[in-house]
Image (cartoon, rainbow, N blue to C red; front, side, top):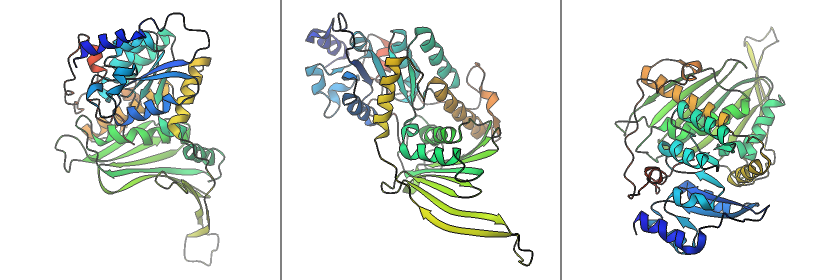
Length: 401
């Protein structure tokens, strides 16, 4: 089934004119663009979110995707964003990152609210373009930094803010696994946005400089193992991030080390996602002791963290922001802050130096020395270029945890 026929087929199924004469207070209609690994999760969650009247799939490869082709017959799917726009109020962009800006702009310019998955854009300039367009159109722009809606991450932030841990020394993050290797970005762009978002949220700040180093082991083009060192100079705290596609274990850890206690967030431990260690290193006040330091060893506690799927919490927040006009917790500025750190990290990798965030804060072109992403694979033909970009490489995961 070609893209043209699919679009016409949908318009002939009685959906045209659905946006005309909708009753006041009717639920919000959402289109999920790109229903690969992560987009299919977004579609599932949106379909059960209070306030959502309808959630439809938008993907040029819909007829070919396992378990998705039937959506075309029952009106639950479209093969282009252009065909879907008259029938939806908001869009979730879950396509590969290279197409985020183009797809989101098409929706924003049509007056639709937009949630863009991480990373919001592949450059700070692209992220700013989305922010400006959403402001001009008067629509909600939200970034899908799902971990900021995770109850355990919220508790970690509370532990830091309340100084339960004492004066915070540093954060340490590890996000490791065997794969999945990506064909268009390195491991920093693929995995680090999660941990940068967590660090910014937990610390309530943004980095002032970034130092990154990485290695090519299997992939000859893109780094598959990398380390980032983020300096939050305004609060005197550092954050270290280790990301890898080449590790035998699945590791999802964030450790916060303070002067009184230490806390560990382990996203792979469903029973005890947060552990607080009553441990510390203290100056030794006993002059008779040859050691300069003493070590406090207390109990390890695991506070109860009521679990609710972060994606569902995020979805409800998106709907609430659309209804009330309030700014999302993870708004465009939040997304831009993460994209700027990624850009600075890529520049650091390319030039082997520490990069100040102010170097990537301007509106100029992409910085020299960065490894360009290979061109995306060709999507099924469509008369509208933007419609093709909206669903390119749909079967690939546009967001990996």
